[in-house]
Amino acid sequence: MTNATDIAQKALSRLQAWNVDPTPEAYAILYAHYEGGNTALSETIEARFSDEEPPQSKQLERLHARFLGGEINDDVQFDKLANALVNQSSGLQGLAHALTSSAHTFGAEVQAQANDAVGNSISSDVPGIIDRLLELTKKTVEQNKMLEQKLDAAVDDICELHDTLRRAEESAQTDFLTKLANRRKLDNFLQQLIEDAKRERRAFSIIVGDIDHFKSFNDTYGHKVGDQVLALVASIIRSNIKGKDLAARYGGEEFVIALPETSLVNAAEVAEDIRAEIANRPLALRKSNKEIGNVTISFGVAEWSSDETMESLFDAADAALYQAKRTGRDKVVTVANHLKESA
Image (cartoon, rainbow, N blue to C red):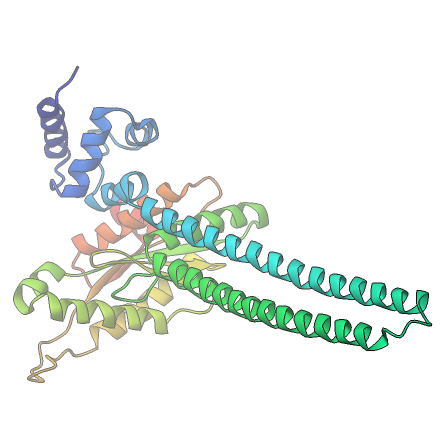
């Protein structure tokens, strides 16, 4: 059996051969691959990468999110909330049934007293019958009032649980810092988009963007200012897309925009508008108001074709993004342009 040291050495050697930085995500992916036990992960790595066609760091990060990402806790939380909602709904049904039974019981008792009065019409116990009816009425009213209060409380609990479930679902699909969609929501959105595009034969495109020299910016001004820049970039992206589009923070300083029913040319225009607005937005420190220049962003743009998977679509956009970085940054490169420049 291969021990942990051997597996670790194989993972590090492979990263070195691929000239990929040994980030925690990249190392974890290859360690899991060589350890075995995750067949889907190993098949994906073997099918997509080789020494002749090595992966980029971003591709390994995506595989990490896909195969090793922690979504179990979210699912467990959803299950707990959903079960609580079901239990409250069952309780609500029980209360409604109790109210109905109480009404039926009251009706039967009244009918019995009425039959007794008719059967003993010459009886002098009319006052007694009236007293029993009044007592029965009072008892039923009190019981129904109590049940109605429980019913109202149950309805309030269900409404609160519903709101909690909705907020939890939104939170699990939203990046806390930028308020854009997170990786989980984007992956689900793109998978559905591919299925729709295959069925309806409609084009769509994606834009992959990465803030230029963001690590150096963080090192110079600190992570707090860096977070403010990420939020600003997200705001600019959000203001440049339309209702059907979905923008996500995909990790670190990387952003992805999915554009349904959008051609490569039109997607490149959207990317260029965002790039220009970011580049021309001056930055200043909040406390001192000191100007610190600006940041720029590079974009890679790809259009989906009918034979592509989500992974191959990302590979194409990543290749265009890498070309933008390699040829000067602060630019938009489409897959078509990338192929021309690489030829």
